[in-house]
Length: 552
Ligand code: GLU
Image (cartoon, rainbow, N blue to C red; front, side, top):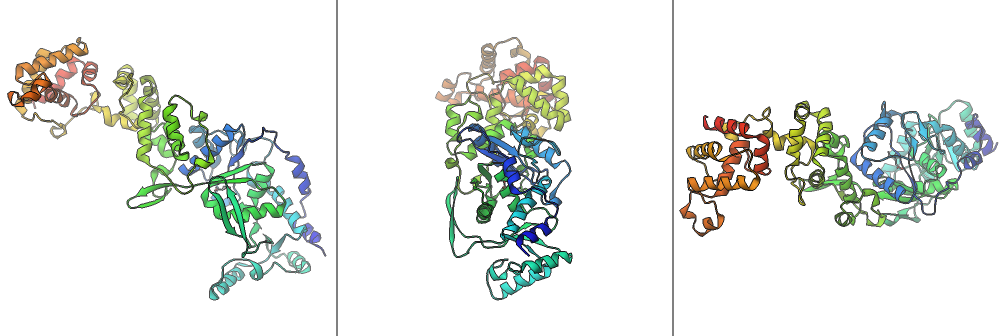
C-alpha cells in the first residue's frame, strides 16, 4: 500500500487535484506594488477597537496602492459563530468608512472571483490540499485519543522537557501506511497532522514589515491541519486561503506573531510563496500604574459600538486612529487640515513596533476640535440623528426648536478659532441645558457665583439691569456699554485700567458684574458669549429667570 492509497481512503469524495484550484484562482491583474490584503474575523459579531484599527490600516494600505481589501469570514471554529455576526461586522466597519472591494457582503452573499470567502464553504478546497500532502507523505492521520495526548504531556512534564507533539513524542508520525489504513477501515477517528520538517535547534529569520527581522527557532510541532469534523485549523486555512486569494500582505494583530514559524513552514511545505506579514501592535491604555491592552471585558471604549452610543463622530475616531497609526500623521494633518484622510500616505515603517497608546481623552479632544469646525446646521443634523436613537428628551427639544437650537450651536462658531464646547453629541445637554426652559430648573446650590456673593447686592444688580439696562435690540457693543453704565451707577469699575490703578475705589469691576448676570441666568460662571446667550434667550426669559432668582 502507498501513501496514495491512504490518501484516497481518507478523502474518497475529493474529485479535483490542487492544479484545478491553482488554475481556477488566477494571478490578479493589478499594477506593480498594489497591496492585496484582508480582514479575516471570526463571525462573532463583536468588533473590537483593535480590529477596527487593523482593518483601517489594511484598507488604507490597499487603497493607497490601488490594491484590494477583502473580507474573509473565518468560521472553522463553529462554536464561536453568532447569528447575523457577519452583517453586524460589516455594518460596524462600514459606519467608520471601511468598505471591502471583495468578499462577504452579508451572511450568505459575496462578491469577487476568489471565493467562497467563508471558510466553512471551502472544505473541499482544504481537503484537496491535505490529500495532496498525505499523498506526498508530508501529512499523516493521527489517532491519538485525548488520554494519549494527556499522557504525552504528563511524561514531558515529568522529565521537564518541552511540551508538544513533536519528534519522537509524535506517536503516530511513523505509523506504517498499512496500519493507518487498517485503523481507518476499522472506523477509528483521527485528525490529520503536518509532518513538520523543522528542527527546533535551528533558527529561522522572518521579516515583518512593521517590526523588522524577527528570529525564531524552527517550528517542529506536528500541528493538526484537519480536524475530526473535516474542517481545517485556522493556521492551515490561512495558508491555503491567502495563497489562493493572492494576498500580498497579511496585516493583522500581533497576537499572531508567535504563529509565524508555523505559518512560514506551511507555505514552504505546500510549495507556496509566502505573503509579506505586518503585525500591528496592540492598542493599550494606562490603567492606574500599569499599561495594559485595551480589554473587551474591562473597557467599554474597546467596543466600536461605544462611539456611536456616546455620539462621538466617526470621523473623529478615524482621525484619532490615524494619529495612533503613523508617527507623522499629526504633523501632516496640522499642515493639511482640509485634506481627506485618504490623502495621507501611510507607511509601515512609521508604525509602532510595540504597543500603541490608546488615549480616550485625546480622542475626545480631537472630537471636540472636529465638532467645533462643523457648520451649525451639520451639528444640528448629527445631534438629531444621535438623539433620535439614544436620547428622546434631546430629540424632542431639537425637533421642537430647530432654528433656536441651530443658533445655539452657532454661537462663536464662525470664527477663526471657534469655540470648543462639545466632544460628543451626548455632551450637548450637559453643556447647554440652561438654554431650554424644559431643562432649566436650578436649585439654590446650583449657582456658582464669583466675587460678588451678597444676596442683596446680587438682587440689586439683576433688578437694575433687567429694568433699566437690557434692551433686546442692542448690538453687542451697545449692549456692553450699557452694562458698563450699570457698573458706573452701582460703584463698580467699568474701566479695567482704572480698576487696576486703585481697586479700593470700587466695589468690584465689570467682569464681576457680568458674572452675576451670567450665573443668575444660566447657573454657570463659564458659558459661551453672554451677549449671544441673552439674545437667544430673549428679554422675557431673562426677566423671568432674574425675577425667579430675586423672589427666592
Ligand atoms: N481569524 C483570525 C482572527 O480572528 C485572523 C487572523 C489573521 O488575520 O490571519 O484573529
